[in-house]
Length: 374
Image 1 (cartoon, rainbow, N blue to C red):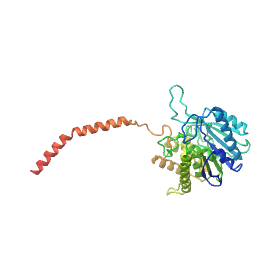
Image 2: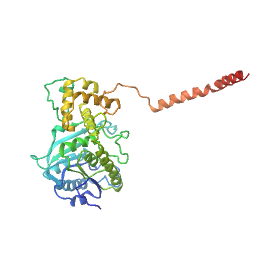
Image 3: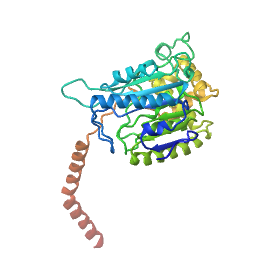
Image 4: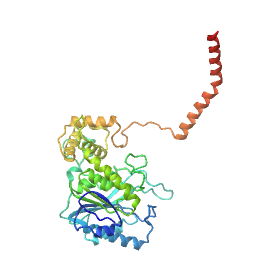
């Protein structure tokens, strides 16, 4: 078992309780935990079917360990399901943590059900150690409100509004998504972690994930200039998460290189995130002066340089042309899609028709050859 240096980004293999016990107190500015939900999910080796009392006791121990390594102004986010959200909230209170928000992450394509409403959300409990001293960068979170996008109201706050406590702009990482790793079934979206990392930490801070899983938290942390520390009990997952972290570190070095259009990938990612949060089609945005002015303010805060609304509009159109913007509702005209079986049946019908006419085509070709030979 390797001990963390807590001075560089890394994925550690081992039990989080033992590894956290070796860490210096107060070293992490931010912790994000997505623990097993104790619902019988099949992991590499972990038993996700503990008794109620065992799971709650274990949760108390790892939450206490994480709290110890948080800085006095640190923040602690926990993603958890319905079954134990209330218990973890009570444990947080007993550990002296202050709950700032009980966030609901709502997503589409929840698990299909037959005898109850489909569950399509996860709870995210946002705690801080000190209710009067904590990191929260509201300027990098603001985006155009409905006052901008629907009414074009220039009297609205030009800096935009803060996200509410129901996050519905982040889809689950489905199997067809480019960011899907494929070797871990429970993968958080990088866009969601980007919001948390940028809101509750500064560049150079340590960001801890005691259940690294697919490695989303440390990978996102290094992309935004933080030190990402992940702990993973599965050797199989730890090896794969290390590869992802190394890839993210290489990507971080390229994210600030400017292309011929004067933009870098980090700035494009800020714009994509704003587009996702604004949830307004490109053509409606670029025609709305109030919305574009708000986006200009938001881009200045997020990307840390000045932009004009014209160059933002041009970049939005360029990303749209490359199909490189997040999908939002009704941003593309409806086009009927053929089901695979229907497409296969149509192809088969065409093939059968082609082969049915083959003898006649061969006869004509033979007659043509004979006529030209004579």
